[in-house]
Length: 275
Image 1 (tube, rainbow, N blue to C red):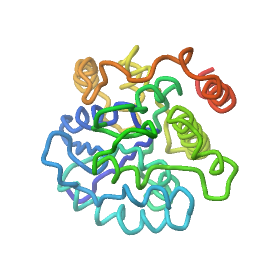
Image 2 (cartoon, helix red, strand yellow; image 1 turned 180 degrees about the horizontal axis):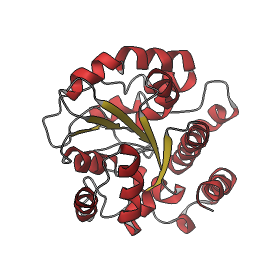
Image 3 (cartoon, rainbow, N blue to C red; image 1 turned 90 degrees about the vertical axis):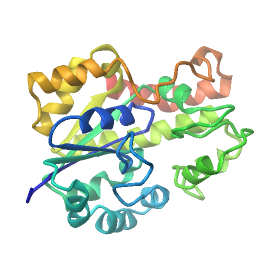
């Protein structure tokens, strides 16, 4: 295959991206990657890892450009595709990279997946035990495994010297993850509104109306057919890494300061994303 098409998807994390990559990888001619890996295979990355570049790329646009030029260049992607017609990489750390990706790969298809703040915070906040797919900030008293420490090195946090950075050390995990949700989704909303090749998806549709969700994903990729749609929808009841329960209760059980920050940051943005 002389030419492979590329697609990239970004979100806050905890939006079923592992499941989506696994399902897309089963489509003939498609290589679906989750954070540079093929789901279900040995944990050897197919694409160069960029977890640690995430934070610096978030704060420095020139470094984001450099990261894409060095680790997501055309030659690297084509070699990884290994004859596939379409390569799609779904990763939380793609958020700071979507703009330089669009510049360097103008024919690529981009997606952002939005999830409501409360659901993300409850799913991403871990109080005890190992988080196998750590997307959010854990409880400050939780003991972290080496893998969790590694992922945390690149997780987004306020820029040093900012007002949010001054409050950071006193914020609970719920407050930190509310900030994380707001910061990433504010950026992603701007990206999807400013780039023609960027498409919007809602995690909630995958849960409540998978046909709508998958149509919105498969059609821009150019692989929508009855058989592909039916296959993806049929798999949607069995998500990889799906949490059967949350360690954090619903918003009415949060502390007052946590609910205040939610009303300040999340509520106005959710109106823009969902209303």
